[in-house]
Amino acid sequence: MIAIGSDHGGFELKEAIKKHLEEKGIEYKDFGTYSPESVDYAVIAAKTARSITSGECERGILCCGTGIGISMAANKVKGIRAACCSDYFSAKYTRLHNDANILCMGGRVVGAGLALELVDVFLETEFEGGRHQRRIDQITAIENGEL
Ligand code: RB5
View 1 (cartoon, helix red, strand yellow):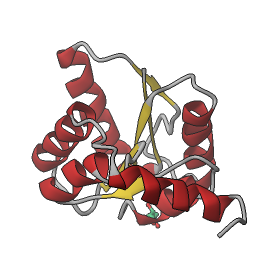
View 2 (cartoon, helix red, strand yellow):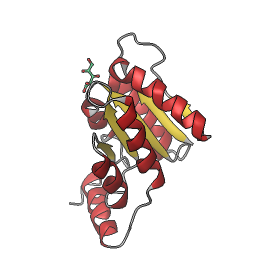
View 3 (cartoon, protein in one colour):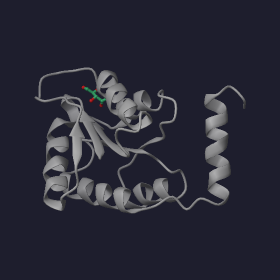
View 4 (cartoon, helix red, strand yellow):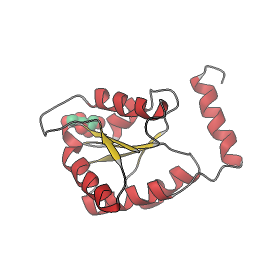
């Protein structure tokens, strides 16, 4: 199950991503927002991110105007590694090397065509592990106040 969420700045892009996931037969849970009315991205980020740390969803996709605010908010949830991407290489390597569990994008930054390519590579790419696991463990150590 893929968690998906946005504020008003990413609403249109979120809807395009939902349609894309439906066409691919990928199940998702939409944590809002459900209209183009103005909302606060941190609230959506928290709900979406917690669905991943609780185990309800495997990975997430979050959109706001830039992708930045919603990624900053999501990264405050322990266990979340949210990556704000607007290019293919970053969306791929944040899975391979960072084991990112949320892809963030800006609805005012990327067009739907590119965004759907980023979604596909993010969802299809597995974490490489190896030396990268040590670095993920160090990120976790920072969260726990051990580093
Ligand atoms: C909302 O206007 C906008 O600030 C928000 O979508 C996002 O870009 C914040 O980082």
